[in-house]
Amino acid sequence: MTFMNMQQAYSLDGQTALVTGGGSGIGLAIAKCLAASGAQVIIVGRRRDVLETAAPEIGASTGIHVLDLADVAGMPVAAAEILAAHGPIDILINNAGNTLKKPFVDSDMADFDGVFDVHVRGALELTRAVVRQQIADEDRGGSVIFTSSMTAYIGQPNVLGYTVSKTAISGVIRGLAAELSSQGVRVNGVAPGWIDTDLYRKATDGDLPRQQKIMSRIPMNALGQPEDIGWACAFLASKAARYVTGQTILVDGGGATGF
Image (tube, rainbow, N blue to C red; front, side, top):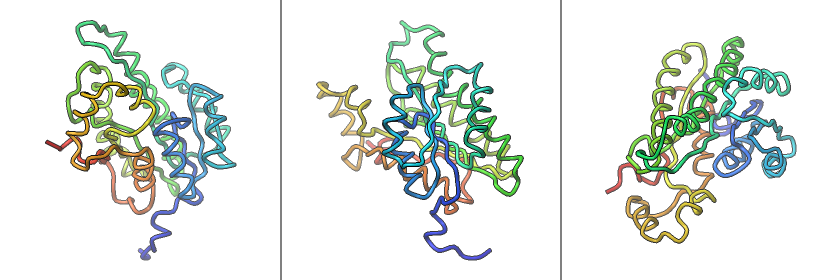
């Protein structure tokens, strides 16, 4: 095999990437990093106005598609519409997510289902449609990346539905990698730690003890930035990671292993 230079190894030129939840926060940063690496990017999410605002930040040719991952039953039709409108997908980033902060004793299975549907069931339905297309084109192959969480590695109170969902994603990554890698489709994940987003600030503003506890867990003594997750995804999607599959990269400043 011909030795690649750095530009060839990390370039995503000629590839099309689909990012769920790509209109804001970490998803928007992922979309920007993939576009900066040369990919044609399509962002999907529930709110058209958010997608339309985000698209010019990513690039003039960025595509948008309204999609609700919680609509599991409607996902096959929605996925077919995306593929018909935008063509083959080389890179799928399953990033869309939600959470519910509620004590376990006050929760019921409907609470858990509302989170699990988005992170796992909806993501799997979308992945199935994209992977079928990737396998059909043997020369093209593909890369599927799930956004996991450090919550799959450490316990956090009052978010059991989220914890169960992200832990399930770890199994999805391993299982799909074992099944699909021989067919040219690599499957990996990125697990963010505490990232400086609007969601993080909403959860911690005015709660100094919580902020101090978080910082005490991070050996690098700093919050991550959304683009830290984006560049990890760009790496996993690139030829530089062509021999990487079934892995989840923790991008957390050491938080999951810190004292």
